[in-house]
Image 1 (cartoon, rainbow, N blue to C red):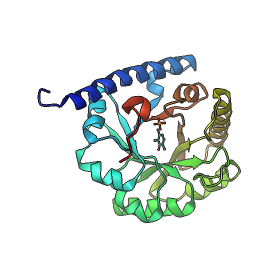
Image 2: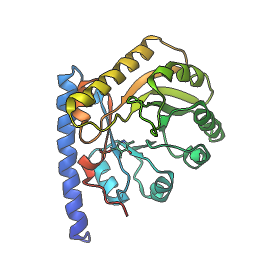
Image 3: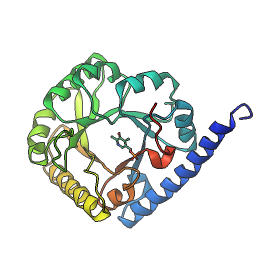
Image 4: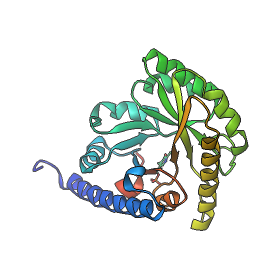
Length: 243
Ligand SMILES: *Cc1c(COP(=O)(O)O)cnc(C)c1O
């Protein structure tokens, strides 16, 4: 520790403090919604964060991280301490880049087309694995945003679930930016309803394990609305600095 610069020491202390705060908040929201802390996955969104800081969070107890750019994931990959931590892909993924990450991530959160799912399956097969995926839903039906529209979700899942080497594990959403908490809760509630609807159909070759929604500003609300995976970036690592 002596060799660490003051700058990184400060960052480490902030991350440790933030980690504990978020843990407490997740625990509280879980209990409030009739669940336990263990029922909720706390995934850290690590874009722009240097590996030393990510690894410090892992030392604090973090067990899931997610990157959202392929290039950045590749450049940081050898530095992550992945012995106790799971690496996922959470950003928009181009079909031609699947090959570069298929052997490196345990789950891809952002599948919104059969074309992408088929390529993920093809690359997973080449790595001798089955890839877990979440289907991204464009719950606000926003133009220029990834994700399948809610009304097309069932059809897309039916097309993807029987593809070999891929397993649908749940749903993910990034709702529109809202000024008020009550607005964002409407989107979270709509997502939860979709999640319950699909789960109740009990399709083969699929298990609706995860409902991934909620970020730094609203992960507590998301949990109260039924999320069991939250993706938190700046509340853990501080404001992002884009280089
Ligand atoms: C960056 C990011 C997050 C986290 O955002 P914060 O507001 O910093 O918590 C969550 N999900 C995805 C897909 C992201 O890219």
